[in-house]
Image 1 (cartoon, rainbow, N blue to C red):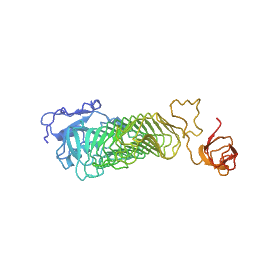
Image 2: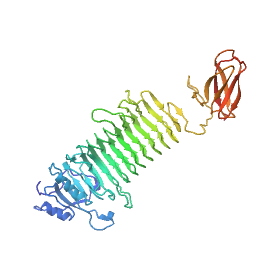
Image 3: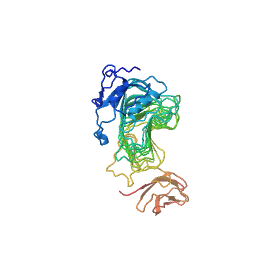
Image 4: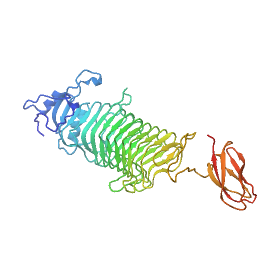
Length: 497
């Protein structure tokens, strides 16, 4: 790499945010690369044999730091060609580790660990700026230099290839804790390809981030993982492609997701497993709008023990790709959750078994106006109650403690009518008379219950039937006028309105 200097090439980004941020230092003929760096600021170091091409002085004052002195320099860096990762890693870290902005030209940069500190920025020109991790690198290719205090890092416009061993892509962890303000990192237009571990991982105290148009493909772990304590962040237009783990593992709280997608979760490169979901949601107070779940190994969206989660206008289709018992949207033990206006199907295939499935006890969870379907049915009740469901295929108001209050009920569909569950302690059932009488144990009976009786199958000498006794909350007795009556009798219990 020669010491020649000159104006930036046509590969430089044209984002408006960079205007004025990088002013070329003196470029008179014969000026050495070291002189350029010296003119940019003493804190910008040149590593011998490194990839530094052009030096710029930052016109951005460090008012963000509460100072009026000149901020750390911004440097335009080109790839060195050093496949060991030493030169490019050192050149970039010399800038971003001091809180400066490394503006990377197009080309391939060989790296180990890039460690930006507060206000540091790694800015590429787009997908043709490639950060290639070298063999033997572990952990994450990009992480924060001082996680407990790092603020306002910006990563944008590059491709990251951490395809070595179990190396993950980008980790933002325990950031900004105790700094007195949210760290507010920004990630834009980043493509993580073939991560050995997680594509993106956001740890505790990752707060007020903006993650936009980021995507991963072929992660050896999760695509995007939000740990417990990852809060108040906005994800827009982000996509997780094939991943061995969940496409999105959302354990954090109070985050917002818009137009994001997870697909091919649980795919190891040759086959699906039967346990990973496009969206695994265990964190509370998260909102998902116009998000998509497709070809998850198990479920599309799995609301698992979470609370105050909202899914609005989302799509779940062709899930259960592992061939197990997956559904479009699985609701398990959800508290105060809302699923509204969601859609999706199998596209003519045999994927997700049901559109919506309820398992376990829910509390104040509302499922409204969804058209998600499956190969077996739109809805499946595994267990539990405590939810309200209204859709074009069914209605279930078991989650309303005092029942639903209607005016007139007009059944217009031929063959439709009232269906009431039968069994122990239900409001409808059958009993068999013995010598003209039978006591039915049923905790659903009250002192004011209206109990209707009718014979279903004659036995012995049938007589007329009556309710001869009742104990509220325990049982009632049916007696025939014939003491040799052994008929089967149906009963229906209504309560006054």
